[in-house]
Image 1 (cartoon, one colour):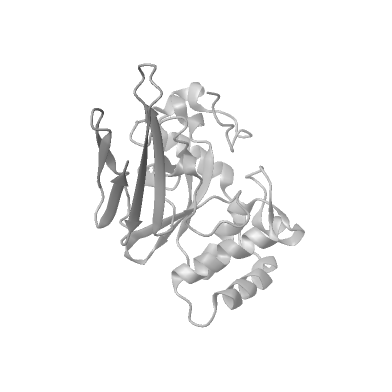
Image 2: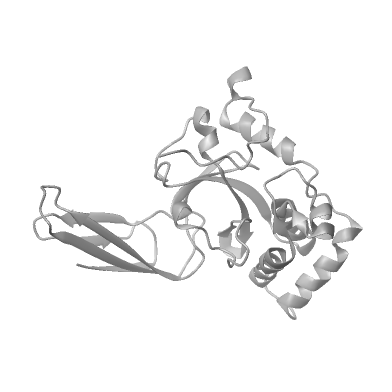
Length: 253
C-alpha cells in the first residue's frame, strides 16, 4: 500500500543530515511554521463573528466549535502550511492550520499542531523511529479543553464538527509538535459509534462472520486507547473488553 503524501512535503528534510531524533525533528517543523499564526488587525472581524456564532457566555468547547465551523465556511484549504493566517482570512483561501491557531489564541483556546499517522500505515500501538517521520502525514489541530479533554480537528475537512477525524485516524498515533511527545488513540468527538468487522475462516469455505460492535463514551481522558478483542473461531463469537475507562461496548454475531 502506498504511503500517504506528506502534508509538509515542502519542508526540506533534515533527518539524514544530522541523524535527527524526534525532539529535533519536531523543533524543526515548529520553526518552519513559526510566524504563520502571527496576530494582526485583519483578524478582528473574524474574531467578532466567531464570538457571535458561539453565543452569550459560551464555554471553551462552544468557542472551539464556533471557530472550527467559521474556518470551514470562510477559508478554503490549501496544502501550503507556511502561508500566514492573515492572508488566508483576507483572501478566503490559504493555511487553515495557521488560521485556527491564530484565532484560537485570540479566543483563549489552547491549541497546537499534531501530526497523525494513518492506521492504514500502522496501528496506533506501533512505535515509530524518526526515520519513519514521513508516515506522520496527517496535520491536525489539537484543542485541550477543561479537565484535560482533548479534541482533534482535521483542517482539510470543510464541514466536519470539532473532534471528528477520518476512520484512518480513529485510534491512530500522533506526535505533538510543541513537545515532541506521542499520543495514541485519536478518537472522534462524537459520543457513540459502531464498528463492523467481516472475516472468513481462511480455509476456502464460504461462511463469513460479521461482528458489529457498538460503543459509547461518557468521559474523555487525555489519551484513549482502542478496545481489545477476544474471539473464539469455533464458536464465531467475540467479546469486546474495553481498555479505557467508563465506556460500554457490546458485540453481536
